[in-house]
Image 1 (cartoon, helix red, strand yellow):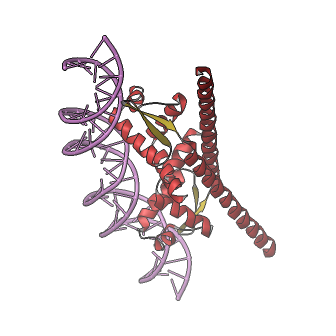
Image 2 (cartoon, chains in turn brown, blue, orange, cyan; image 1 turned 90 degrees about the horizontal axis):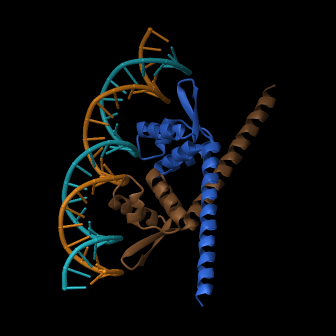
Image 3 (tube, chains in turn green, purple, brown, cyan; image 1 turned 180 degrees about the horizontal axis):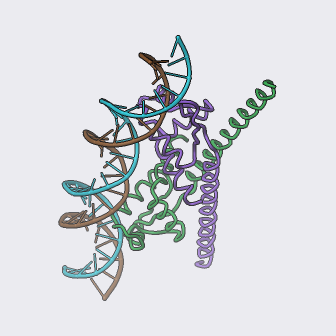
Length: 110
Length: 110
DNA sequence: TCCATGTGCAACCTTAGAGTTGCACATCCG
DNA sequence: CGGATGTGCAACTCTAAGGTTGCACATGGA
């Protein structure tokens, strides 16, 4: 799971890749050429981004004739969301414990 | 919220920063010098990472005498986790709709 | 007061990655 | 078949980010 999270976080760090994901999700399917039309970057740049997203498990690609269609894949994103939520909850628990300990010490000081 | 998510994703993309967050969370409080002792990088590198984490809202720092203590702050992480979970759910809905449409078309073709 | 400890600041090095361009290769269609 | 369209591959540029080092500036304690 750590590998998945690592890949997803690395992939989502780039705003352009998030934009690409939004586009692909909105269209259901999309090719690198089509996506490049709607962005201020070249097709090759889009291809590289899609490769990163693919190795992170965020998209999958299918060859249809001479074109390659990309679609979104929610599993890795879901895994990462759960990891993050768990981490946040863990932090909350630790902070609550620390606060409690501080209050106890405070009372003892009086 | 987009700003928060952007900052958090950028900050969490680096493995060293995730390690730092783990350390800070585990200790409750920690200084840059202390953290640097347990990592193969210099104090200055740690300071830079903590600055990134701070501007992402993932940690907060307090000056105590001549030292600066860092602590974890869950809000931004929680916000990002929710954003991500919502996005994953959105993708799921879209994919389900597409699948349904495909099956309907399949039936109609017979 | 003097020294040790902990930070802050600034200059510098190095590399990963975001982006580009050019061209070759495959596939569809008139 | 031959041209148009869509990809793949490779070399190249450029900037930002991670990391280091050196030194100056505070603060606590003997």
